[in-house]
Figure 1 (tube, rainbow, N blue to C red):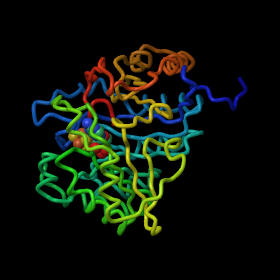
Figure 2: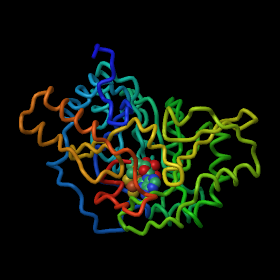
Figure 3: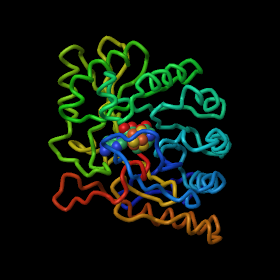
Length: 333
Ligand code: SAM
Ligand code: SF4
């Protein structure tokens, strides 16, 4: 293998270039599709990887061909000093892109220091523009703080801001066009994500998913959409341009048309477990290796071996599907 060959290739021939790192399982929201309303058991803080430990993993995977990092959680902005970690990652040779997924509540205060630290891109979760619906789904009454966070992010210079909305049947339908109009006028790409069985409350049912093709049908009543070729080869979303040239929209059909064949990502939980799929039943414990003195070579080998047996795809649509023990906030979405 020459030094330019990809070194993280799984058993299906997929090359892994993207690591999503959860920095905390804690969150100030309690979204119905993710966390329980109360009595959440969080990880003991001593189990969270330190910034130095995360930096070490990033350095190791960068030599294996990973060039894109996304910070997530829980709510990543609840982890104190996050800009310090971003600065550390930004200096790692081979890392071209650092992005973050956030609920935006703390962005108003933190956007400036995040962009100065080297954060390039933001995905903001926003499911509803109606304040009552926002409160119902996020179990917090703070739509305005999220909108302020979004505005501040734009003002401080974030160029690429995407908005993620989880698509839930009998909830999302009336919100779709409002989000689309906001995206078109303010320059955000709106991405609808089909509701996946990753909720702590375990209330997911197939008939609660608003499917991608239904979302497209709603948008097409007003706007002509032009599919963007090969968008699935770059990321999880099928993307469409508005035919009038004003922006684009993405649909993540994780349930109705999974993108597993093109999956190029792995995840690390806040307590240092490598997950090769959102729906993995098995995890690979990097924290133990790190804290027991393993060398970089041993950790790299463990990551390569884990990737080799990456799941071919999730099984949501199969009879033997099992919902993972960890809910979304503890995996890192
Ligand atoms: N707290 C941050 C946020 O909400 O953006 C980051 C973590 S959150 C787990 C990451 C993404 O996962 C969010 O866009 C959220 O909407 C999405 N998500 C959470 N639970 C989901 C589910 N059951 N199905 C689909 N998407 C989900
Ligand atoms: Fe928190 Fe994000 Fe989960 Fe909502 S989706 S509860 S904001 S981690």
